Amino acid sequence: MHTLCLDVGGTKIAAGLADPQGALVHTATRPTPATASAEQIWHVVAAMIADAVRLAGGQVGGVGIASAGPIDLDSGTVSPINIGSWRGFPLRDRIAAVVPGVPVQLGGDGVCMALGEHWRGAGRGARFLLGMVVSTGVGGGLVLDGSPYLGRTGNAGHVGHVVVEDAGRPCSCGGRGCVETVASGPSMARWARENGWSAPPGAGAKELADAAAAGDALALRAFRRGATALAAMIASVGAVCDLDLVVVGGGVAKSGNLLFDLLRAALADYARLTFLTGLRVVPAALGGDAGLVGAARLADMARMLDKR
Image (cartoon, rainbow, N blue to C red):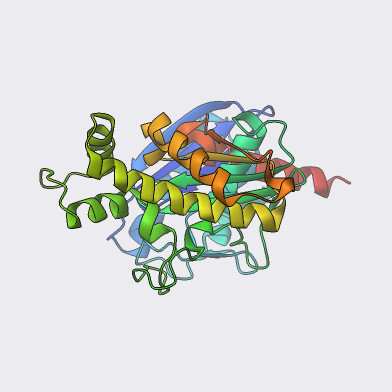
């Protein structure tokens, strides 16, 4: 029997069906109408669920949800920063009503990304893993001793809000100096423009990476600055959680060796404790499917626990 999996974010909503081994046998994606009303957005989600259930012949064994956060596991509600009308939206209960009698599991998109990579991607075999997405923001999730670590409310792994500059820029979270304000794609491009990078209007992380790869010294400085902030954060989280692997995905990670060479070099300076010397940083393998695969795994793990 298939698992229905959903990945709800501020840019896109994805739905899929996963077989018991975690292979996606169906996927569909729609743009998130992020400025629409709460019910209009819900209608998009409900329609995608209906399509997936119909393709599964009406039979699904469980539902896993990866949602942008913050989330609240106790209430089953979500309040994605980039979906303004969803504040305390009862996503878990709404989905449970559409698929009656089927267990529904909710998780943050960061932990589902990490869990997906751990199950079927670049994190296979790791025991203590940090999964990260470096894109328009910096998100993350933890798999500790082989199990997803959700935290008290379900929001553990928000590594983009580790502070790396004590007098840094204000962050969208309300804090200041978070790694997201330095190392996200828009943040790196903004810093480069403020320091004299000549770029066409609307140029972002991809154009910045292209310029750095072509030898633009300022673009390379921007990438080094972002990579150094990521390395400082990874060293801190690695020391706290005794990690053995970090998997990095997202749009900025598509710059390949440009990012990873700078990141690994900086990490060697920060991660000096002996138990961190073997900490590896590798590119993600599942791309945009990691959240769906992880959501399916979250649902499957919950079902296995229920059977004990």
